[in-house]
Image 1 (spheres, rainbow, N blue to C red):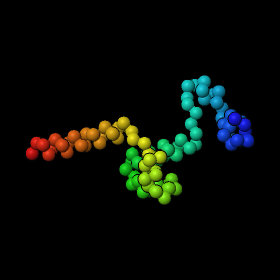
Image 2 (image 1 turned 90 degrees about the vertical axis):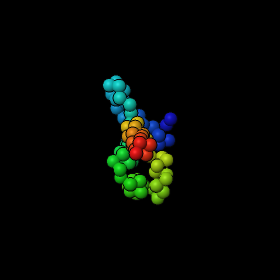
Image 3 (image 1 turned 45 degrees about the vertical axis):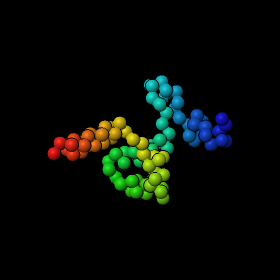
Image 4 (image 1 turned 30 degrees about the horizontal axis):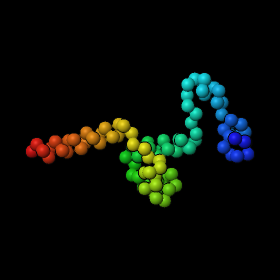
Amino acid sequence: MTPSSGNDTTSGPRKWPVGQVESVGLDRIRLHDARHTCGTMMHMQAVPIVVVAAWLGHSDPAFTMRTYVHSQNEALTTTAASVQRVVTIRDNP
């Protein structure tokens, strides 16, 4: 990859201390990755998806859900427990 391609993260204004990051066992994180994290964290804090979409500059909340908001194991477990309570209550009056 050449610096003129715009994707070179090892030289130029986007230079990363790649060796230092990798030497301590960390993964490189792009600024764009933080955008995904922001959308997911807002979603997990029960911010309405239309607000998350607006925050990220999206006109379509469905796009935000498909692209930026990722299900977390904790959220899935909490949801499963909620469904289980509803099923248990309904089945045991």
